[in-house]
Length: 432
Image (tube, rainbow, N blue to C red):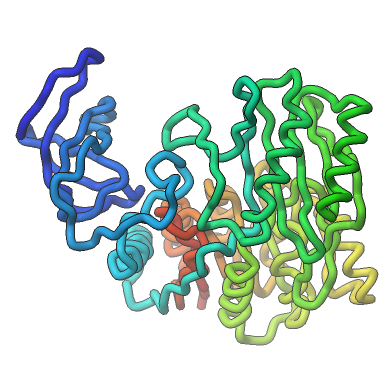
């Protein structure tokens, strides 16, 4: 192995990537026995790399030159790949990519203490389907940069295309750049959160400075010119203010039109959402009198579950619960879904409260829901369907349920985070 000292104290080295680790970085052993992690590589790549630092006895590297390509390598389709931090695995061919995703799922299953046979399959979501994005905008002299941060970097990568975005969002990039420029007069940076809903774009501008009258007028004209459903502003006080609403943004959940509050969380793609919903419903194939939908949001699963049983939908956001109620009243299904405000992270349901339900569906944040799962493990709830976007926190929580007597009956996965190391899990647990 060849090493070249750097002024910054690092070194260069040649090595061969042995495998791709769980976070998507290539892994290699150095001559001194240390592990090196190098992003944007595949197994079999012979590379010249540069160290960027050390962490817990491992070397964090970056590729300088690809000396020989591994058999799993392909040409990345996006011209921004390697600069933009959004995609990690576009350099992997399809066979290697799917094997990587399946391996992540099986590792999570093994870590939780269950057998691999419970894994019933990985469903893919096509690229160019992502309907929810957050863009950063910065003013650079007379130009506006709009895009995503680089991997482990504050550098903003200006994008003109994105192979992950839904085509409607990709086509809107020039106009979104114009929108950003309206707010960047006296500010260095703003962000735009965009949701593609059923009746257009719902855009949230996050900036520290309150829009002036002229800015507000310009925003109205821009929204009308591009027929955007709504543009809202979020300032320092974290209060949402609509700047213009041509029509109330709505989304269809199982045949029910639900109004979308500003800044709402939606599943990344409508295709992925449907696959998750089908997996949840298929897992709960029995008959139930009562189901708890925990971290319910605006009702992604609640409206589908209401066709099977009475659903108590627990959610912290008051606006999301109001949105549910509007759809419930409009469909005249009062009593089938009971929206209930609760901060499940700080105030999880107790064991006696959980015991009232025959089944529980939970879709927590990335960090999981350990305090809630601790109580679930002690409960008499017959069936649990756990939807997770983080295999590590899922493994921890699944092991807790196992210790409480729950069997993992099935686990399916949905790859709606295309070209990343993430995968969405739908796990069906049963007790007794």
